[in-house]
Image (tube, rainbow, N blue to C red; front, side, top):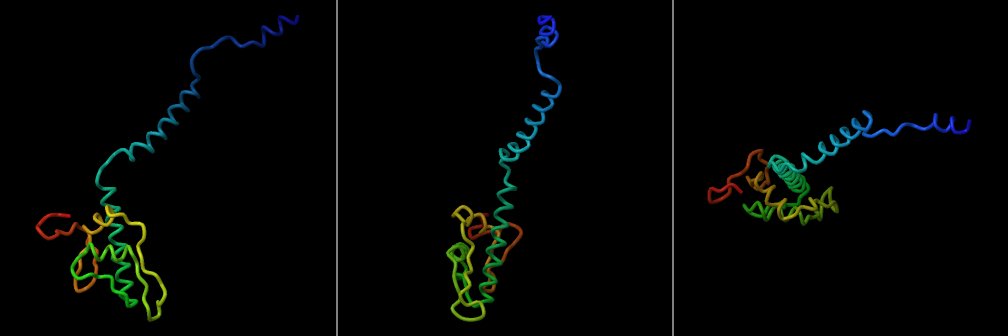
Length: 140
């Protein structure tokens, strides 16, 4: 009797995967591909959006600092002005005395990219939505 019970409890040997296992594999592969494909596509729109956002932040920081009495604008040179903002500064008098105006963490590549969307006009660093043509007729 003991042998009969053991043989009825045994499952027959099955090979292959169940439908649930195959569907789970497809779902996991879909998630992995959904994450990696955008990271591997090197289109310039992601970098251009990053550069425009950095340029907006640099421009607004420069304008706020000017309102507080701190001028980052270095003549007509956009690159020097941007580097001055990355270094930061602090007004010595006024209502915002002691507040730090800075855009930290920008690399030289970020500075070069953001400068394409900035221009200096009337002593202010302004954001432009299109790339600015720099001297020599080349787009920077």
